[in-house]
Length: 405
Image 1 (tube, helix red, strand yellow):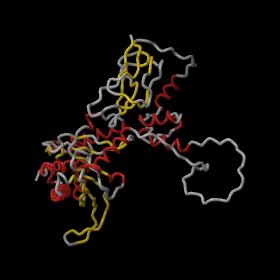
Image 2 (tube, one colour; image 1 turned 90 degrees about the vertical axis):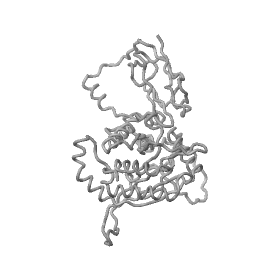
Image 3 (tube, helix red, strand yellow; image 1 turned 45 degrees about the vertical axis):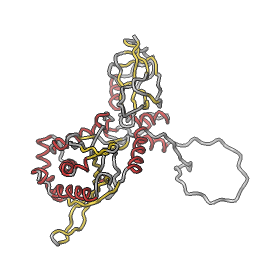
Image 4 (cartoon, helix red, strand yellow; image 1 turned 30 degrees about the vertical axis):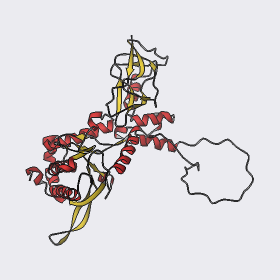
């Protein structure tokens, strides 16, 4: 019996998707629930599993094809057995060793490897447990020696022209590579341009003395981890502080819908997470009701899913406010861009020791610059400045978060 392999049903906000790569070839045997093909939307990569045991008999949509919900991707012959190729049997120990050492490959990296005729053996993975990332493949492509050009007759001597300053490889060949944008990168570009052109975005800045928070963390992090099985980081305190401030300043937690302002009675905070596909923003929902342990567990879970490419549509949909931490990459100060239709985004930055005045004395303190970008159509300057000042006061006195004062 033949079974159709269909594109998963996409949400209403996603018009179509792109076939990233097939993990099987026509004629290969497959097991039920084994991943057959990966589909990339502008938010996530969806894995399409085999509905039953059988043999892949047809691939209708090749890698790179654009597909819509429930479109035919291929066909599977249920219960069939693939013809075994005639090869010499390898020792069991060798087979087991090879299987255990094959590195995992990110979907975008797998597609780029196929386009450049590379195998996993040609690429050195830099991800966790040797996982091959897109950047690793790009580095391998750049390192490939250029094909030697066919010999041609030497041209007549001409006057030497000034040589332009260009990047060259070790062999002297001029390297250039053109690759299409991924759907995620194209979507990010579209949303950033929309935010810049359709909102009245302003940014206000402040700085936070991180010493009280760092002292509290150093004192209680071991006990916290032992009890809650989660590490105590700085992000959970900022999320909690933001949830408190958002309830005090509802306009910062609001959004514009046509000519209406929608005030949200919940604090769904997006946490910007870096993945091998780009920046994604999974949503922690109802953070106003969450404790620090719940927030830390939620962030850790999303980070793991982002690394493994397992985030789904529900993880990334919605959100009333966003926090991004450029400090993990060394950013000292930046202006975060709004994530429409949200009206504000908080930017955290790296912690640096600086001389500051405390009680009329110059002391050295670990300081962090913070930035709040906001839509001036909804949020007035006074509200934005006071909101960010509230974040500063709560983080500098973390006991207030526990006592809710």
